[in-house]
Length: 429
Ligand code: SDX
Image (cartoon, rainbow, N blue to C red; front, top):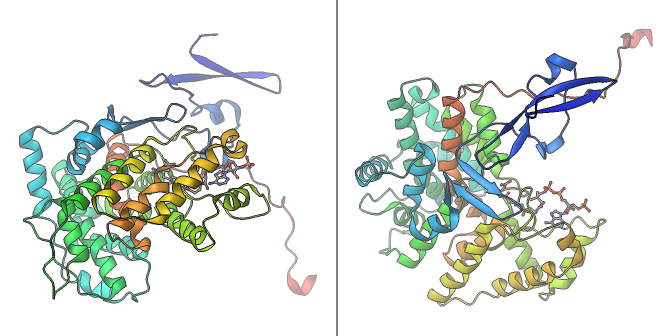
């Protein structure tokens, strides 16, 4: 047997399946010919062991706590790059030249305004609407204002224009979803400001007051967006890819990704972490009590912000965010007791066999909410912030899937229902 194949033996028959190896020496058994050869399929609920695609965008090693965007480490990018430069890198595959970067920033700047009719859609939402539901709806409504974006097979220039538009307009839509919730008038983009400063001003400026962006906050936000920008085939990115695989538009695929991210097991965890820490604080701040609850199988309580499908070591983003949280709170002169509760919870968990045996470490969501809170961003907006950061990753993954002309995603199943049975109409029973 050749050495680059796997052998599967079933009922005395052996099937050879090719092996494929990536640039970081990860090897996969390619089962695309399995059913044709054997009539067999594989089953892997939650796709814990199943690769859905080949991708050149992000590499992560869960055992070693490595995360790289297009080969650059997250540590270097968070320290030295900017969110817009990282967005360009993820989407186009290389860091931009100074000329390309200037052009990219200018294109983004001149597309930040959204159609005035979007305010009518926004007005249709009650003020208690969760901003994630508003955001996913407003993003999908862009298909109405830019009908050419509906066809993903248009020219490269037109697809790139659709990409620039969503990158430019997402901060506006995100800030407007917040203004809807607090019942304030929306703010229009200020094109004299950089990406993060413009977002903060649209979020927090009030008609009666002059709003000055705090550079400490703008810088911390830029770093947080970089840290959230992509994470290979996570739940929401897989959603964007599978929706896009039917040749649905970029905007409808992104809207679907926003909804997948909303779940508390995924991007919604950053909101759930703060709600959990607040509850622990209100209950006297006893970390050990909640560690025990998290371990108790009869208790539905989970330590939100802990654990990860891939990272079985520290999430490298969590390390950077924890350090940034200390730095931002210190610079802003904020003493937030829930940061100490979070640190106490982390220390207690990392000493406990239950967490150590299951390799449950803090993930990207464990400390991020503490920084967002220090910025004055309300808890129900935390997952919107995650979506703002993840947008270039979703775009890059959708673009790669389209450019590789990947087939429509359509998994198989193992049927466990009734076997054939005769229909007995009601009056014959
Ligand atoms: C994100 O995939 C990505 O890349 C996602 C993300 C990204 O950037 O896109 O990194 C962003 O979504 C981070 C994760 C945010 N979610 C949370 O913080 C929610 C809390 N964590 C979990 O619910 C859980 O850890 C998951 C969902 C993140 C991962 O779940 P898995 O891989 O399906 O693991 P599992 O649920 O099967 O858990 C394995 C064991 C179980 O115990 P046993 O059955 O072996 O006894 O670990 C336990 C679980 O009960 N466990 C936890 C736990 N997480 C797992 N126990 C207590 N508290 C937790 N947080």
